[in-house]
Amino acid sequence: MICCKECLELLHDYLEGTLKLETSASLEEHFEDCPPCIAFVNTYKSTSHLCKTTLSSTEIPEIVKERLKEFVEKNKSG
Image (cartoon, rainbow, N blue to C red; front, side):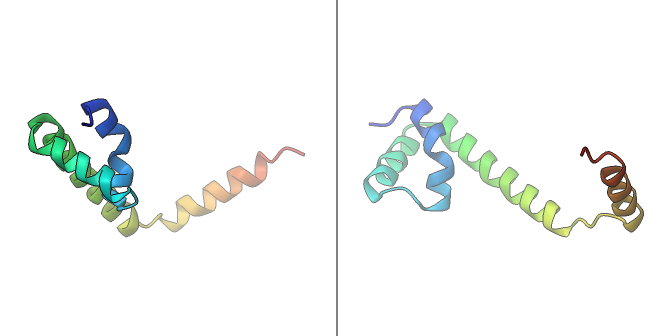
């Protein structure tokens, strides 16, 4: 049976659906008996979704792009 520490190590792959079927089944079995891990998984899912949504919908203002480009050009080494 998988312990909490292993659960955390496998969580990303589990949520991406890239784990072997047996490993996913073991994780799900662990989740049935571990409310703290279920709470963590739910928080992780919500946070990931929020970050993806926010980052994909936020545009950088043109002035910031220009100043960033100027800064990079000015500070190029070489």
